Length: 415
Image (tube, rainbow, N blue to C red):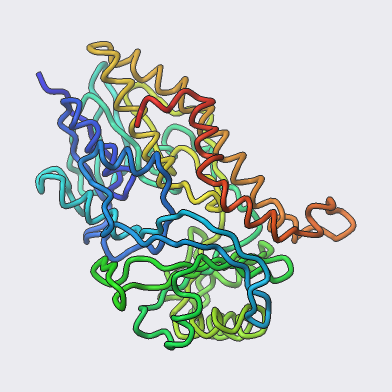
């Protein structure tokens, strides 16, 4: 008899989990709370070898159409001059590009929109998802892949809440064709850093509209990390009507004065080439959080991806981590055969320390930014001054750092 998995959350982690479970014989169905497809959401993301290998397992071949290769990483000073440059081998993709490939490969009946989970019931070997409209779905396993504000995690671990890291990421993306030609020629093909005092900006090319990677049809992605005290974040998250959005303000509701101010500050603080691109966009911001779940398995329910652990984005491995969670879960269940509880116990045993190690790495790479909220006299030397070569070197060794954590926790067999 085919076992059934209820995957809560239809973003990348949920889709990868569904594909990998289906490949091992499960009937995996994805339930997404949003009523509309998610393909228009998200911006650029980095890739690592582990992610590419797991995508292949999920039936997605990572060919040249999946991303854009950048040959060099540079740091620009305030005047737009290159002050440091290093060769690199990175492929920059986009959330929407991966989503579309994974979504299209899943049978239509196995991806259900407008299904908002309210609670979970478990009786014996059966787990039941109960949705807002009163409908119920029963299965042998429930996978919580519903992100940082996970309903699944909230039911079982209400004490495990995201912890604000003290800074936000302003994000912006602009079509290649809208970038002035002289700026395109100068920086478009590069992975570019700007390092204003106490801040960090990175920019790189990504697939454009309709996930196009052809020259002239691509896009340029900017991520600008900026310290923001809790009271500043509260102001940023308050809309024109005075409503405070504690769980994150939707981009269309960010006040116009906030947008105008950050564009003005871009022209003052970062290289003019980057500022020129930034001011032509409709930027939005995301608060940066850490999250660690002390437990991943609750009877027949298991957490994966950002529902379990949220690592800061500096390692560029959020999607890679979600993919490794999904692969570990699918393989643990496959290897346990009929003993589902043993498979879930193995998943808990392996992925718990792995997730904690990824969170620790993200904290380490974001420590300089978090420290900007401390009085100067309370900061360590590394929190007062930043070595540009070290920043670029850390960028260049990201995949090595991920590989070392993967190897240390015995996860290499999953890809």
